[in-house]
Length: 356
Ligand code: NAD
Ligand code: MG
Image (cartoon, protein in one colour):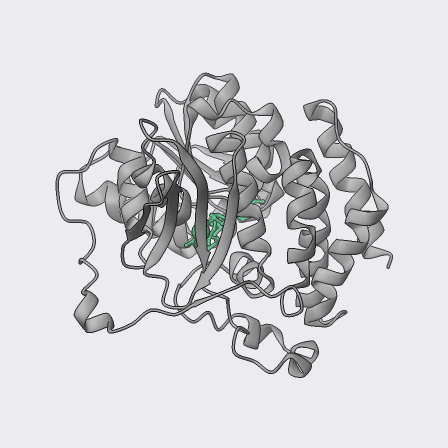
């Protein structure tokens, strides 16, 4: 496989599955955590390594090191593996997805921003999503029966129990205290604002086609997806909050062994469901509109990434992330008509958010 983003939360879990099932890793791609990358090189012996910055090259223990976005594209073209695991975070992962699909490779896609931004231009039949909710939907999805609604669950993120008036004073450290999942920094912030769930609804729309999609909070993160069938039945996918389960399916196709411990319902005792309140999660106010006009995902994503950068730099407060994103969504009432236009639009929206 070609693994991009190997040093991140998804990357490390992917390598755990690769090791357990003896899968060959032909390419390792990472950002700037060279210490961990070097340990991965030693263990998995890839033929090609890609890093983000040329200045790190001297400390990488490998004879063939490629650099940056160009390096990623070159590695995808050159490698023989026909499976690319894209676990890069953010818009930076889009080019890898596009290149992999152009090269007729299958993409195991954790980089949800690819679908959020460019879903209209990607052939989802070559994409296997790595996300617990889409895995849950796929697991439940039975097309022999008419489906009425597909539901995914949210944990509610770090601030689900905070008094509303305190939210504007929330710090980065507060936002990173996720109740149930251990994940990278950006997606953890996206969970606190509920933008992650908005993105997942968009992804679901591109992966499963037009339909009725929605989300609710399930505070334990033991149910990841539910499907309402027309006959009145609802099915639910229960599994422990562990990304190795969807990753194993994405890498292996079918799974014959235990990957995670089963959820023990007696031990769990009870479950709590809540509606997603747009007062606590203002981004939720554009859900219907965005699902009607899913091509506008690029605007939401660019604004959100730029606003998160400003939040991390301590220039804006937590609630400003959603505020700026909603403002950008209202301001840029456009849709890209082809892939190249996405890159220009992304840049323009980022600039706009940085100047606010
Ligand atoms: P992370 O921050 O832990 O890891 C990101 C990885 O990408 C790192 O290896 C980093 O070095 C690399 N990277 C970052 N910027 C790069 C760039 N410009 N060029 C090359 N490499 C770069 O993030 P994560 O939590 O593993 O999430 C990765 C993706 O998977 C995100 O899109 C996220 O939304 C999605 N996802 C994550 C989880 C999870 O449980 N962590 C679950 C579902 C989906
Ligand atoms: Mg998810």
